[in-house]
Length: 357
Image 1 (cartoon, helix red, strand yellow):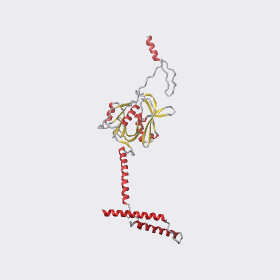
Image 2: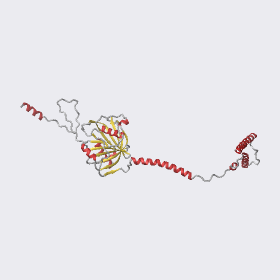
Image 3: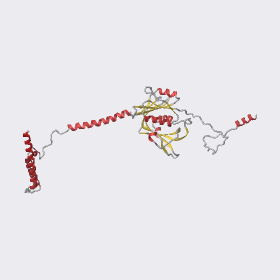
Image 4: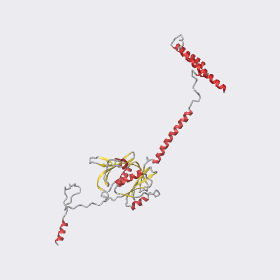
């Protein structure tokens, strides 16, 4: 009887009810008799299936590995064959008990596409991943505990543009770690930032250093260029399509055409230059008659006559009636005569050789 009475007396004790709104400071010490509150079970049971299709490059594979380390609530899967359709992914997620999915799809080992989908109900979005920089490549100084929950920071434009509102909700549900998840840590020490710039979504990951707002980048870095938003999960009607999107293959084709046009322009310039060349030579100059005859003596005489004519013209311009004497000295005349004789001797020698042959 005493034991039963003692048990009933313990049950009859009532605990003090504290309103939830008041922030009561915790006691500095906890006594052994105090009741410890049990850990609440997580209500949000989001699980994300992160995997890739065959044909991605090594850098894309490292980016997928970095995202897996940042998301403790993910589940892995082996590579999917290209022959399978995207609708098969819904069945794969149901088998893994996942309600979200991130699929990496590579093409030509150059271009990487990312699919983010809400399984069974939708919607799903397709992105082109650009400017990829992994954690191992950047070697940044920031660091965070593995499995810690992140804060999600979005640009103000995500609340203004309609399709960005939908993408904001989709990104928060996929990248946000659920509270009280068994693989997550019970504190927050890093921030994901999603900024909308140049019609793209820029992803950055920062470590929180202090409460004042000190941040250090951890990585990875990548840019999401939205392509389409579908109504269902990997299927359905396209709710939104990017009008400014140009595929990477088309961009490379435009660059090749630009290089080709340079060559074509250069060839066209050469043809135009040859077509516009003057057919007739320039008009005869003053000294053209000097070179009509190959005799050096006659050429020297003609040069002297031309020099005299020039001096007479200069004298007329300066109103000088008398013609000045020849300015050539005896030494210059002797040198000219020697040169003329040497030319004549060479010509005679050449003529003799021709006769002998």
